[in-house]
Length: 116
Image (cartoon, rainbow, N blue to C red):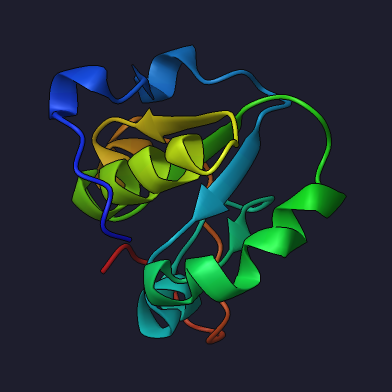
């Protein structure tokens, strides 16, 4: 992931403007995903994205909305995906904003879901 793009060139959307049927790609690490994530999100950690990007071909057509904890890693992933021919949009504020907006969060550990 060596493509360098200025933040102003990365397409972004606020949580409030996310389409209800949009494909959400969570690029956080496994422990963050386990603790809490959006219910219908697809999980591919940022470090695994280049080797697993083909998995996105199975998703519905349209932009892929990329999310992380606060927006930094997802911005890098969005820039890389767009440079690689995908239609990707960074989710501004990440899962912290998702949670602050009162959107549903589910966890994989059986405890109360939380955003790490």
